[in-house]
Length: 406
Image (tube, rainbow, N blue to C red; front, side, top):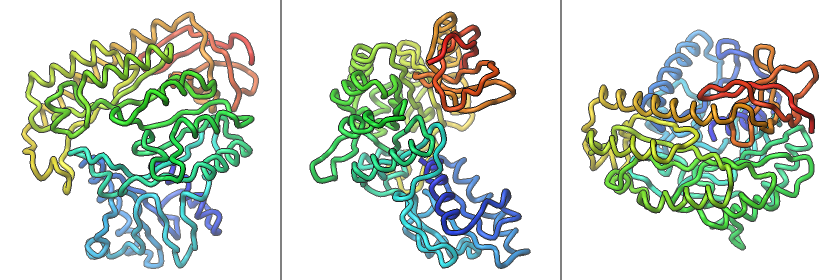
């Protein structure tokens, strides 16, 4: 979502007459997009702001704007803390800069890449106990279905071949719109677009994912057999403390339904280690859960209290930092082994690759299951679909050669 919003803000600035400066030092206008989902991310924002403040001392005319989840409703306190920042505005919005009058960012398509993002819903209504997002991005607000389809058409006309639909909780899309169009309806509309090859969507919430959506994944040929389904913990006790709204039995029902209905589906997940109350025994349950479920990828993070959340108010951060770090490394090592075993099973098979560019002399792209794939070939494959026979595999990527052309 942050990347998509940054692309839109950049397109907005260029439309208003600005051009990229390359570095903050050379820029007349610096626009900083921020994330505070974890303490480490917030610290990076503060450090970057301190550096921009230093630049402004030597160039007082430099204009600085700050957006993203660092910006709370209390802009007066932010202005007092960072007096050198000219503008503060919430995530997903843009004010009318004196220097650059701008529309709402959601109405302005970003530049089209081979794979392009479209935000479809902002905010979240779930209020998981550890999460700052509902406090910074607000309650769920869906974009009109017709507006999203129009943007997708524009991006495809500009060269996009894959559309990735974005939201803090895409499964809630449409519940606040007239007629209550859901994500399945949106996927059906996008699946009809000529020139569009693939559709993905993220992120899902297990509490809100429907059987109708799973059936749509199976029946719509442009919707990739891949999704992110964050579980966050491998024990019901921690899930309850997180306020996730489901237990492991319900989560595994979803996984089973997905794997039965969508053959070959790649499922990734998110894990938080070191949540308050997670002792060694509970962490071992998470490891066992990951071993048994065998996700295609696991995005793991250490818990850090976010001021204003229920967990920060009510739960002691009782897992030492060193223990959190150790648990994170254990999850990463386990998943590296699982991913390697899954990748090795693909050696000798053929996968469809949407080619996104070149790296170190090789073409690269992603399979429908979102695996990075590299191959060598003398022809121009940019934006095309290639059938690649896999010859080598690592935990996180595949290498092969052209098998036949589409």
